[in-house]
Picture 1: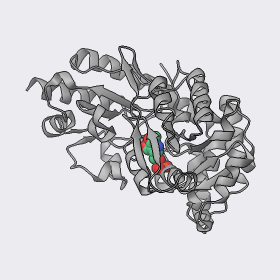
Picture 2: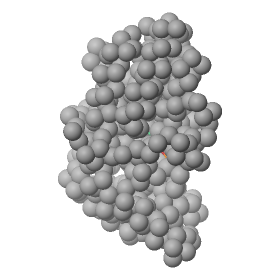
Picture 3: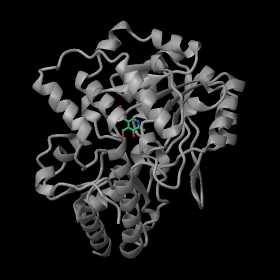
Length: 383
Ligand SMILES: Cc1ncc(COP(=O)(O)O)c(C=O)c1O
């Protein structure tokens, strides 16, 4: 039995004012948006309390502490040596990707993405004035993988950039070092820039090994990473992420961000992120063990109660990508689960056309909630 993180009773969780708890009526179990139900890591809580008690809530001033804390975290977690000066604070991952696209592309350029993928990937490109080129993940009996052959064909048409998701939401895939090295080789060969969204990296689960893209030889010349503590430590509302570069050339890209962007990061977000990266590692270990247990529990519950639903347990994240196509609920199984089970999941189609018949379930919650949700879902399918 792992030393699992506790979860407050639903009556208390429902008092939260964040998106997860406000969207649906109180009889709905909300397992949709990617917020976790665990309490904050104690060092993060303490840092935030200390800041509020000192009325330390002015504009953020992230350098050098954010870069130093991230470099310490990356070295400890993954043996990746990061230059603290190559870490730039940004409002959130979405803003980081959009600002990078604005510098790295021209209006009308093509930018490749690999659906099924986190829905804002479909919005960030158009927001930056580019058009999207789909290079879907390849699916076989063992789950999803990057399709390197299709990627090469796409790169041969010279898109300006590729937005990578590693680990990949919603399928929980952690790309291997070999696949990433192949991607870097293709990017160098065809002159494509890679923007790598690595927000889920701290949530790599036992059995998988995450490779930071910029730790690979030659990657720094063609790639930029966007990282954050917001998924691993549940800090999304505090608005702090970071762009990491690995070459003077890419550091120059960050210099081209709008001058005002440095004022758009949350000060409490920087404080919480520094505390998380520097002092939150023991808590993160406990979180990962808890999510591993929840992943196992969900596998057993699906097998016993919802045998028509299939999945590949994720290698990272707290998100389960459920293939519900055998339920006969057309392309929108989440509508069935919301109407008949009062369980809210993310519609698979939000992640691209390949998501038809799928739903995404957030299992970063208590064992009792997962038990109740799957029981209700099974009853809804039977009824
Ligand atoms: C892959 C991915 N990128 C980015 C985000 C959002 O990050 P931010 O709130 O920092 O923009 C999420 C949120 O779930 C995500 O899953």
